[in-house]
Length: 327
Ligand SMILES: [Zn+2]
Image 1 (cartoon, rainbow, N blue to C red):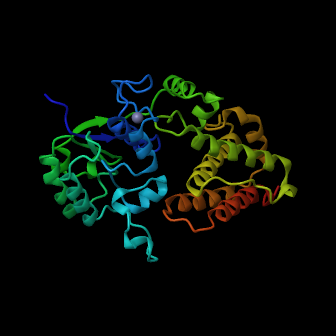
Image 2 (spheres, rainbow, N blue to C red):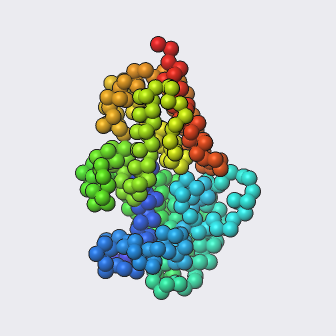
Image 3 (cartoon, rainbow, N blue to C red):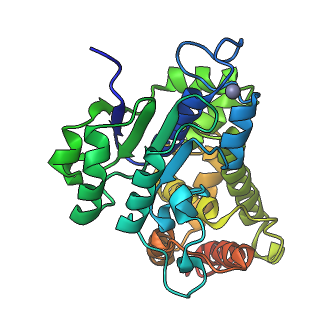
């Protein structure tokens, strides 16, 4: 059988399914497949003209179809979202892929390749389509134009319409082992791979190391401030972007709670002693409130303009877990 032109990856959230998908798209479009870094495995060289266009989000033969809210969460650029009126009005960004965007993809699929190579349509997450939108995609999936590849992913395979599923080659994605994660991080020249692997729970595939390291560095910085005591109010440092900040605070909260209960921290095992000291000082009721707040914040797709101020406020709330302690 020939290479199947539509691939549907599926797996749990939180370990870089989208990043892996976009890496594969980049690998498919890379024009330097014979170079030392690129290979038959389809890894992009990140040096050729095509890779530069993909990185800039302007490759004409790549169409990224994703809900506006997901694009914001991921800091990705959806081809389908360009020029939408959505950004102009004040409504919350959509979590659904609109049928208009699917129609734009269908129109694009009929055009010839700009760079004379493959064309790639990335759809993520595939389940974010109402039936009319899914139906609009169906025919293009059934009879894809020559040279057109569909790379799609979902965390909810059960929510993908069976008609779409049956047109795809399914491929499940698992969380990598610790050894594989370490190998991956070392290959990318990460300084302390053990710390970052723990922080990411080995979900390093597709992770931009600086992105993971950013959250880790901020969490450590906050821990040091907490250790210094409540008088060090204010200097929370330059916080990372809100989605990274929320994830970092959630991980920190989990580890504080685990340390308080005498369990090994999941994300910051190297800071176990400090986490235990702080965990013992923590107000459990305030912790629960904070935990719920971070859950809500994590579910918010659109952050206000002054995102740094929001993360600052969260950091202050974290500090109140300790200042509010009754004992
Ligand atoms: Zn390349």
